[in-house]
Image 1: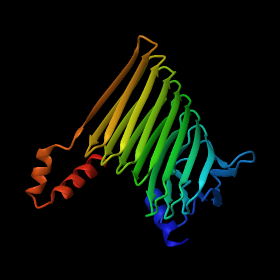
Image 2: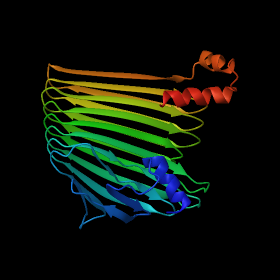
Image 3: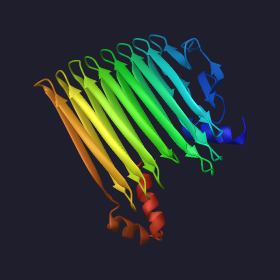
Image 4: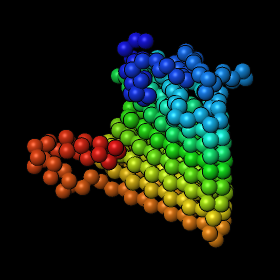
Length: 305
């Protein structure tokens, strides 16, 4: 791998070399490296671009990495990935996409991920998005995540838009059956004229199913963010959505909650707070020797941690 490829993989997947376990790397719209193990099988789709990942039942403490990198301008990539998690399995999935664009042509990645969780399984899903490169071409990332969770399954999704992404639309849809639990943690940073749109749509179908969505976002300069969430309680269940945002300069954040109760025993809660950086926090840090910009950067870093 060259320097750019190594830097992207380190940023989006914490990889400094090709891992020994299950792994799939996609670059510039084409599959590049793929490796399966006895516990996790990765196969290429025959009818469209993408892969199927099969995690066998009862697998414990295993991981699979499926990063995507784009290192050229003028790329428009679309990929479909399906994950089949066997009953009682426990696995960590590290995804994410990094775009390095030093040209004046736009580059774009659209990833459609479908998760099929078996009974009693546990999945940790980590997804980072990053745009770098000094070209005028845009860096566009549009992830779609669809999750179906069977009885007693657990899914934790930690998604981060690190910075440098010109435009993004993030769609997440989930259906939860009895005793399934979904946790989503989102962190988004936009600057300059960037836009980021997030849409969550969760159906709590089974008894005692639950979802907890925690979104933290920072919009700076002239950037724009839109956060939309819809949680539908169709049984005895619990749903919680928390959306906190920080505004700076001429940026804008819209937050639109939607809660639908279809059962008298459904408990659904939405919290939203948008504001600027507290002046007293900046002043306090400046008394410790930081400049105003350094103080604001430190506050933002802590908020998005």
